[in-house]
Image (cartoon, rainbow over all chains, first blue to last red; front, side, top):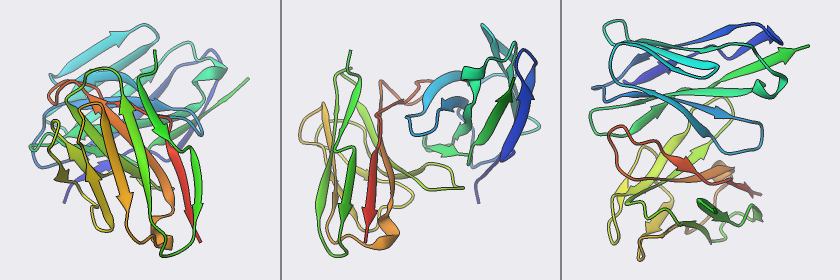
Length: 109
Length: 113
């Protein structure tokens, strides 16, 4: 079967750095997406990785290792508005997105 | 700049009732999707469409029907609502598949009593 694993919840301090991990087992791989979802709102696109390595976009970076079936989202200089759920999704061989259950990130002052 | 618009935002139904959820996008996207989101689970694909007049089943299609008569609209129907269909429903659209992010509506919170 297809499976995406990410931690259920993480806590970090304002101004710090946090890394949210995602491991996956899917039938085929056509890229990995990270989305942010604030409570009661729609998911919004953060990043896309299809090749191994690090993609940096402002305070957010995303890393991919296809051989290990592993990705992480790195958030720097955390702000209170970063409190949200972070969703990892893998596009499989049928170009359908397989979603993880999300990691709820709690930021403390 | 509307993006993806879903109506209604909230709805309460009784078991056995029917209803249609509406989704409209103004980005001229070919691909549209319906997902459901339940606590502790990832988004699950119900049905999707790769263009006007086409639809296909996703991971959890039973109990739902869809139509894509116009490129900008994607309708999700519940023929006979069941309590197991209580969920938050999200519509999304994308310009393509490979490498293209999906853009989501604000969701419809549906409760079946």
